[in-house]
Image (cartoon, rainbow, N blue to C red; front, side, top):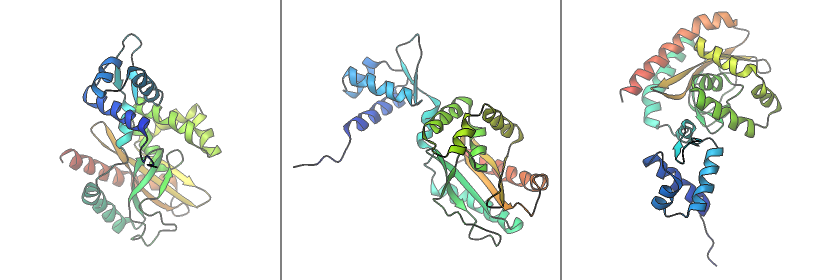
Length: 255
């Protein structure tokens, strides 16, 4: 007996997304014709994607359009060459002069994924977070910096997904607070996120890295909370992180 190794409905959903990627603003009939999937199935697939925030449909139109949240599907894909050439040298240079560990995290699903780190080079690392380690998008400095830099529609879509998937009660309570959006706006205005982890006795400052309309991730520096006050850390490290982020943005956009 032959066991199927693929999921047909998922395969068809990808066909519909691919179709809209090439023919954005298509009707059910047009998508059905292009994908050779019957109209009823196309409708159900489109409505599933719409509920997930990946596509939208105007109330006075029969056409479906890709929404900004669809960009999140590619957020976890970051070319190693780009990280090695633009990110790592700057993290290494800052760690050399400041001694504290620095890292770069990119969004991956509903978490932030460590893609580059100086935790093994810094002499002041209390706890190491290796490449591939996932941190919270809700309670980490890199996660807050990332969300604060997202366009409103993308941010709202991400928060909706987080509300459905987060299991930590503390983080879920944070997401439900009316002040959470204001917190992200304040971070956006300041240009950095500061988080103090009392249990770990570690504080972190992160700034987002953007390129065009995309938010690539965030770079962060961690330090012992007892070593510097928040004010001292902000004065000392925010300009350095923002300068690095600006240089990365400039070089990335010139690639």
